[in-house]
Length: 88
Image (tube, rainbow, N blue to C red; front, side, top):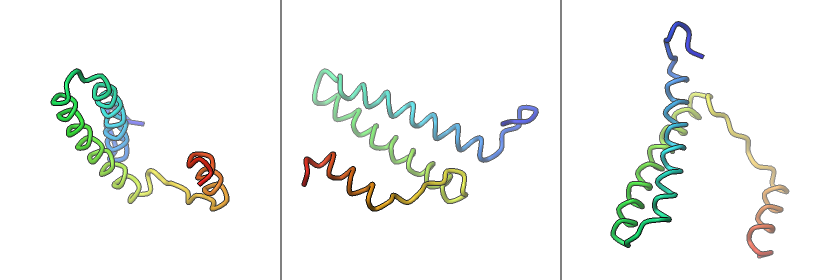
């Protein structure tokens, strides 16, 4: 939380990451509704760039310990794989 309007580096990165998540969601929706292949291709290129920016922000936060992630339990991973891979 900012104190006296001052944002920490963590606050700034979290805000930027949340903004990227919001933006990519809208570009994704727009790509699905594009009227022509040319417009869709253009939007897909932008969407890819936005995802790259989002990944860079995530990686930076993760490297600083501000966005920790857990390793997946192998059994849960296999269950999810079976569920979503049609039993393959």
